Image (cartoon, rainbow, N blue to C red; front, top):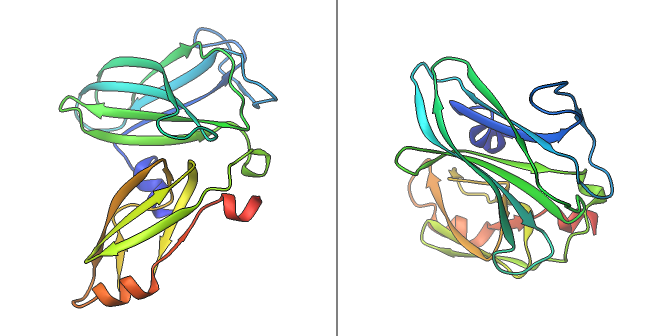
Length: 206
């Protein structure tokens, strides 16, 4: 949960989206995703920093059943936000999405194009998702772990018996990425290599 919070709630800027019943200028209630999503989406963006914020908001739809990139950019917005609790709302037309095979990812980048917030937004509960049987592997080199998958893998989690923490965890994996392990004490490389374990949500619901 700490990794979820660091990417989302414990950031100075925050963004999320949901199915809007009426939109930004009316009732802002959000409905549950059904067999397909065709309603307008309502996206809320907040700056909780004590300073003004300039950057960009991006909303993407990520396919859980396509190899490779499998993503579509639904919306990009320049952000010019005031300090301390400044918020704004935007209607986003997304076309038709299948909530059982698609997740949304909302990101906020600062003026240097560095991602300061990332929110993976499922459109239904995991037990309703039609996930592929992804084969996820982890290869350790020193204090780095290269994780790879043949199909998109949702909420990949790394664990080990070494004393330390991974720089990121519980993430959406497409293709491969390298994760650093940050040791709390010396000489943890061999323990990391021998005890590394990788899991993802598809293993528990397929």
